[in-house]
Image 1 (spheres, rainbow, N blue to C red):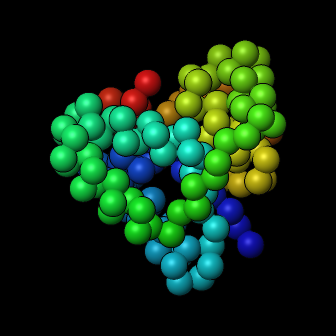
Image 2 (image 1 turned 135 degrees about the vertical axis):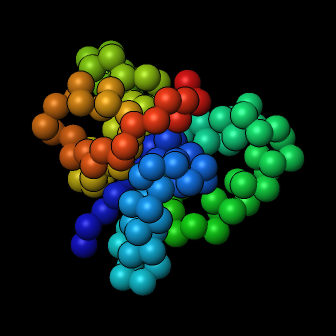
Length: 141
C-alpha cells in the first residue's frame, strides 16, 4: 500500500486553496476511501500551527488546526532516533530544520513526500518526492 508524508507547506497549500491544493485533497480523499496512509511529523504539525498563527492570528489558527485534526493524517511523534536522522539530513544536505523531519519520516516509512519546496532535491534520489506547484511563503521557517 502506498504511503505519503506531507510537509508543512503541503498542508498550508491545502488550507489556503493555492495551486497544488487539489493534489493534496485527492491524496487525503484516497486515504479516507482506500486506506491510503498519510503521515506528518509532529515537528511539521507545529510548523503548520505556528505559520497559521503568524499569518492569520491565534483565533483563526486554532480554528484551522481543528480542521486539520479531522483529516486522515497520522501525526508521528519525534523520538531520539528520528531527531538524530533529521539532524543528519540537515547537516549533510542543508535542509531546513523542520524540513529535515519531513524528509527523515519519508525515508523511514519508505513513503513519498508531498511538498512544494525545491530544497528537498538536495537529498537526491533516495528520497521519493512529489512536487506541488511552487508558491512563495509556504513555509513557516
